[in-house]
Length: 291
Ligand SMILES: Nc1ncnc2c1ncn2[C@@H]1O[C@H](COP(=O)(O)OP(=O)(O)OP(=O)(O)O)[C@@H](O)[C@H]1O
Ligand SMILES: [Mg+2]
Image 1: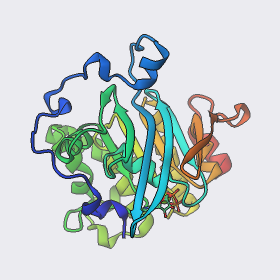
Image 2: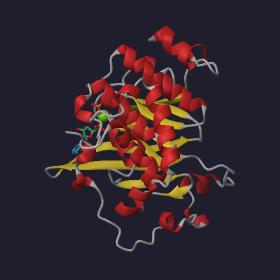
Image 3: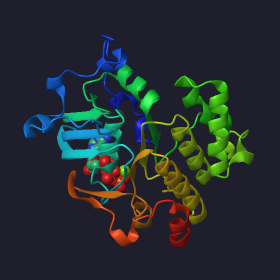
Image 4: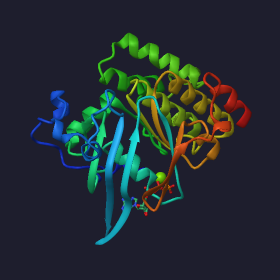
């Protein structure tokens, strides 16, 4: 069972309904990320898509504290493609779940597009996700009684796209992922790899400011992995910001930057080495060569 289904782990709904995000306001100056305040820097003109400050998650397991994320400072600029790697249990899923508001943080700050997000209530997070975040989980959560086409269109419609825009975007995404012939199928009629690709199409349907993906190729064979990576490369070239958890170094080589976690802390954060770097415009070729 996927963890994101556990509604009990989400924070209680914010009753005030007056979150800054809902009002569309920017936070006051003294609410800017602490790192900037500490360093005395003037805020950059473009806010990072993601900034975390000393982000901590400690689960309680039958009264025993389980530290999963231990003081993560992560900054992801607009248009960056960041791969998160690390051994099992190092906190990768916990980190991306917190970035999407699916798991409340224990302490620290989360900023999305320059706005404080960790203090939001559940309803404000839901709104933020609908507008700004696409999520692909290791276990895809498709709506069982809707067709593939409707599953992919729904987020765009919810976010206010016109039916025509939603349909055009859906057609383009399903085509890119080789799923056009499956548009009228129900999710249960699809193979696991097909469901995974539909989940990716759905996450991108909205043109999210941030795509969060937790092992999006985890269940795919090499051909399907190639399709998914090719699409990720394409949307990245179009400016999509991506944070992707992966165990696979070949998958990570498509990213601009690899952040390595160990025991809930960042132990390495660097650009992908030059010879492995993807020259602009050839993501498909690189994937072909390495697939
Ligand atoms: N709901 C939970 N309750 C208690 N502990 C949890 C919970 N979820 C995760 N943990 C613990 O937090 C730590 C980090 O888990 P997490 O799932 O983030 O790791 P991961 O890096 O994604 O691992 P994997 O590569 O296996 O997916 C682990 O020690 C895990 O056992
Ligand atoms: Mg995980």
